[in-house]
Length: 95
Image 1 (cartoon, one colour):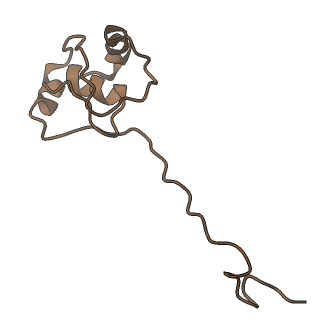
Image 2 (image 1 turned 90 degrees about the vertical axis):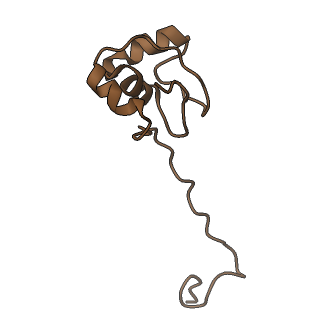
């Protein structure tokens, strides 16, 4: 079982991977002294709170599958502004 977190993983992802049950997110948080909503840094090693659903945990034990569902919004694209970038009749209207 891999207890080391990877990029984009939440505590709920690790709870499913390590214990086989998302309900163990709270027990996993308590065992590691963190909050369920904390952002996990890649490479953090978590203490296990015990396996509940062995079949599901075994699916992730071989590391063939990695859950990484943490939401990371992409930064908004900033378009250049100003008279040097405007085109007459498109961005810059002349009345």
